[in-house]
Length: 473
Image 1: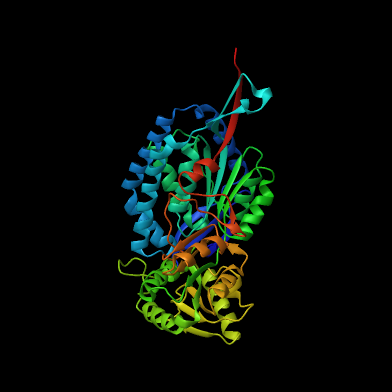
Image 2: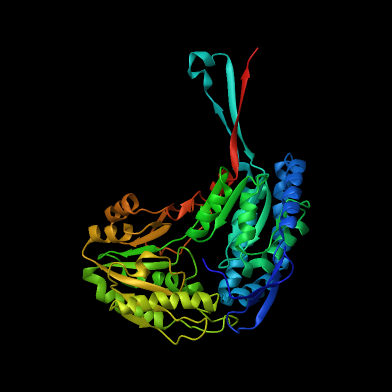
């Protein structure tokens, strides 16, 4: 995942740096963020450690009350959060509104589910040495969690880490992407307004170095990241022997079988490919279509893509706004040019200008094309022809990523085969790959990361089992 264009670093002393973040639609400076110096990071970590120790025994009902209070405080800030999402990252208004609503609902869902965080009785008398003994486990928090979050869903992907980690008893230090700094600070303030004690939720601002410093700190117990695979590698190395949770890159395959409902597949895959300007780790990137329906699907898909409205993200009817920065746009264009240089047919559904990249479709790219090997993180898809289902599965799995995929088919047998053979952390049948709910395990295999988000699975990620054995009198 990329960072936005910044004017800087500019001088702010040896310990701090200022970055000017530009609105990707207007090009004007949206705000200036100052990085957190090393001394401040040390202070934040120690404050989090002290707060964790002070409040670790807080009753579950009280922690649930904190989250419900935070959700109510965020509701009051919804208009401001939506406007910042539009201005700072260029997300269209309807998508920004949906994201903030989802974030608030997720916080409340975490509060409701806390009753599910339990332990188990261990039958240690199953062996002779365990006779007369009783054992049980309970799940306990780790301590201080460093949560590193990206730009593309600055509210939702933040609370996906903050709410489960906090309600299970941890203290959380958020390190947002530069573009998400103001939003992260607003959400942290909402948690404070909702009753969360001082020190349990804090925000460190800055760029890569601040994330690395947090990950490497000996008093940080868990590092959790949503971001690119390269960032995951760097943070995991910095973290060393501590818990690391990474939801990393993707290159989502969406298979269309010959027996699929083509109209339904097009209806679902088009927004999955292009909405949010393709800046989702599970956005459709590779569409793999069985040969008998390839031409029909492609024709309808192009027609539907051309109907999307590209433009000002502040308008209520805009489907695609700009990508996050000129830097990101240049990287995406370079990947499109790579495909063109290999003789691919490229269909561009609109005009390219500045940070705006219209829906772009690359047809039957040859092996080695960057778009089928890398994560594009933009409104670009490839449509690939498969001879049959065997070939479709082979193409889908011919990638180092394995986050989420999909298959459209009318056959239960094909659906079950996809479930068995597609290498991904999650798979949807007759729904596109960008669809996600918050109550199933979400995370990747291969280079797409480790660990799982989603209630109740995130609760397990931020806690560890502790065993107690008792010798009975």
